[in-house]
Amino acid sequence: MTLLQQEFPSDAEFVGQLGLPNTETYRSYNQLVGTIDVFLISTRDHFIVVFEPDSPPEKCRNQTVEVANHIFQKIDTKFAELGLTDIQFDLTYVHEILEIVVSNISEHNLHLNNTYKFDLLPKFQALIMIHVINYATEFFSRRIKVPCKPQTDDYKTTAWCYFKNIARGETEDVIACGFFNAAVVKVIEEQVSELLPMEAQGSVQGILSHGKQTLIKRILIDLAEKEDFMQYKAFIRDPYTFAEKWILELTNRKMFEEHTDDVSLYAQLAKKQVSQILNELGNIVIKATDDRNAGMSSWVETFVTQNNECNTLALSKDIFVHVENRNVTNLQTFSHALTEEIEEMRRRLFSIYEHDTAVSVQWITNPVSEILDKLWGCLDLCVFCKEPCMMTSKDHVMEGKLHECVQHRPLGIGGYRKSASEKMVVDFCSHKVSGDQKYKHNNESWLYKEYKENFPDWEIPPSSDTSKYWIWVMCKFQNELAEMYNMKIPDTEDIPEHWTSYTKQIAIDSL
Ligand SMILES: [Zn+2]
Ligand SMILES: [Zn+2]
Image 1: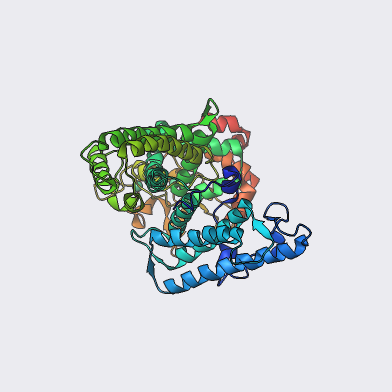
Image 2 (image 1 turned 135 degrees about the horizontal axis):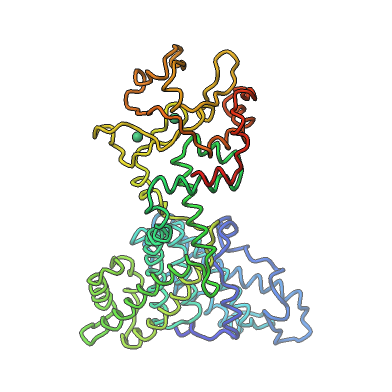
């Protein structure tokens, strides 16, 4: 290990270069030999000529690639020994592989067994290490038998973490903290993502608590203000789905457009959850670190048990498999390091939620569907005009109450046309049911007033009331409605004269 712990000239530079490997590139390699191109070698940073100062730098540059390939050959052999079948991940592989790099470069620089005229510089070692780490991460991710079944990508991050920390010469404490962080952050993120839809729901509860009719009214006002027939069409066809989408959009607007001190409501709610969980974790870390714990494994055991007694965050001992294996000797030091790591976790989680937007957010569960389902109740629409049934119980017919509407609409809104002229019917269904006119159903003619012959579960009381709102919609969008149902617009004389005088404001105010 001492060999691995030698300092790199610039940690920052080294870490800066060490991102998760480009899977495409590294997956395409079958072996390490031949994967470093001479153009990657810098005549200034990677080696220095120490014998025969007039040796041509280009020659030395080519020779550094030879040295790299010689190292790679040894690592390829090591990988070949591991075989192509599933292997259990073993930390010794990581150590052995990195040690091959470090010891070979040191040996080269002693020039006892070579005649090269140059020394290899720490930046060359960093270059080779990064390359080997990336290759090895890909190699292990593909072949590893994973102890606690995370996804390959999770595993890849874990393997990469290992290599990176060891290559950087981190202490066992720091490495253990890194694994603790990786294991727990994921669980917290899952839990917060599950809680957020409920929090979001709370923020629009006001609209939902006033019931189906209030919700429909809000939607109708919004539709009138937008004057977009495509939206009317969607609402007329399937008001429930439209309402669900409408509330979700409203929720997203509220969550992401309402800011306090530049922080969206969504991020605030997420941060509140994250902080509650992490504060509790911090307390448990301190509580779990007492003299009775002899080693890491026992510490993890105590930590998980105490944590799960709190019911803040459910953790399985399995996720700490990499923490448990660390050779941490002083648990007090580890506990201090972990307390600092928790702050790092807080920053990382905060930043995840701060970057979410109404577009990027992926709700684990639709924050409104369940509550809307209860609030909306009956999904039926008036058989003539498509007005939603006002009942908020799904089983109201079974309970002895018939489908009924708060208001009705001109029949043309529901697609009714005159059979001969194919012109849309402008009259209201609640009006028709008192006369002697007929409608078509199953290719037969039936009297409106005997609608119960076909629709026994419906109650459409005869009424001369008319909805100014739907009259306005019909007059304004008669061309679009005609196109929607493939019918003709009504004759002007069919439309009562005062109907055309209704303005949008009158329509909205009538609701
Ligand atoms: Zn109706
Ligand atoms: Zn109903």
